[in-house]
Amino acid sequence: KLKLKLKLLTKDEADDVIGINPWKLGSARISSVPMDFAAGLAFKGKVKGAYFRIAPAEQDVLDAIDIDKVDDLAEGKVPLFYFEDFELGLKDGEELWSGVGNDSGNGKSSGSSEGTKKKIPLYFSKGQLLQEYKKMNPKVKKEDIPEIKVTELFSLLTTMVQATGIGGGTGIDGQDDLEKLVLLPP
Image 1: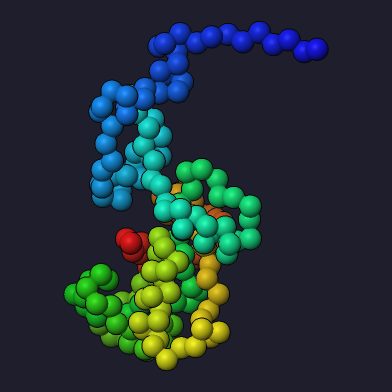
Image 2: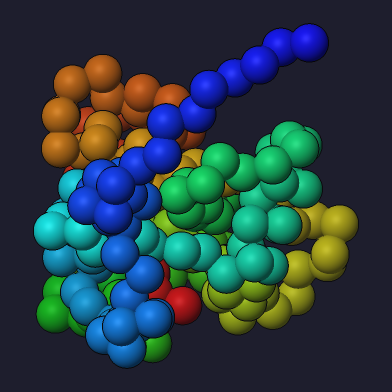
């Protein structure tokens, strides 16, 4: 028989290691904050005993697992969905979230036209990606929809911040592509 002697943690040690249960204290809250602020907090993980995480919806996790053919998505990972070569064309002054059009009408890059900027959209939801693609390509048949790809939010943000090893495991390659990326909120 194997006997283990476990050391019990003091309350302060437990609070430091595990964290204080904010739901017990009545001080817990869930807040919507700008993505840059949320990502900064999530990178730190724990600040003054409080944990910060960006959590994907359960369906988004299941979609990512299905697409990547893996058993599970590691805790704290946030999937982003995209199509390869899917770019949105924006006319000067047009915002991505205010009725996006594409100058080619097929959701693919057709070269740069004057006054149009190309953006590579990354979606937090597979359904949102498919909805946008179908809106831009209303006559597309289900079997003609391109293969959906998945990358991970923090891996992408790390690559963008480091600005070295471009495309390091994100599925997005090249400095030009990184500059064209845009995250679309659900």
